[in-house]
Image (cartoon, rainbow, N blue to C red; front, side, top):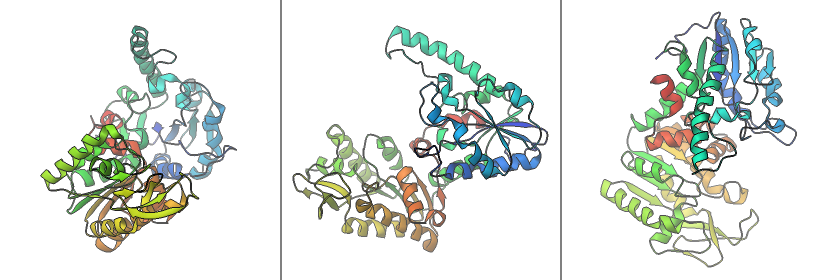
Length: 417
């Protein structure tokens, strides 16, 4: 596989799949430019070599229709400022051949939102699933997706995928387009390479003790991840809303806490498997409760098995954090995905903030390798100024989870083979 550092882009047009799906305020202004900054090393390497850039990305979920509020034209000036060179804009990503052909060395063209075309995601629009019409539409869409990818590929000599956040999707711009470039003309960007190496470090080269911290609201969204990790970790910390399914499955009283009754047998199965494999499964033992789902709710700290009626667990209690701190600080490899409380409410974000501090401390003081991924986990290390105190912060929550599940990521496979 060709690597970006081996390749000389002089005189070449490179079409780069970036993840510029950045958050915007009501005025269309960027509130967090992390994703743009993350792509800069790849983009600047291509320009420094004497290549030209065609940037393609999605923004939001326009579902195959043009939506001005999700136009990448809103961020053109921000991209221009970040790169330090003029950036032209193509208002239709599928009709940019002339603009692409006119690009000279060192010039940059930003394409309009790929998802304004349903062919990008490859999903039939306006047809009901499970019908014969849907099957026909799906078949036709697959061919249309290939044509769309072929059009995008025709703009450039080289394809670079630097959008790890979409690497788990087999979209036109993340996987299908790679078919139209030979093996020496397609490669992972520097950000993608870092992500792949970081995940490999955790899943294939982990030093022990290896601890995974899995939080979030639902067991159903991370059950496959948890099961796969049981064969790799020494300690598995399960926090956040998903923990209450485990507590109720054991006969605990969880009040109004979030849980999934249908997954209680699975929760018990995970506990039995952990015991059988010698994995230390650590659940919360104490919780901070509220009697309404709001930041200003009254609070009380209770034993996790005895939450009063009308109250719900909303953050990890002091005893839980004490247990988890000891486990984390003794670890040599740490994977963290998901909050251990209702992180969006400041008054219930303490536990998640403490986890961020423990992970940073283990990394800085004890030499642990730490990988943090998932929206709220990343927000936590950023909020407390700890992003540079952990080993790696992943830009792709969903892609990271699927990689941890053991799935092949289409965006990586399309280049690596």
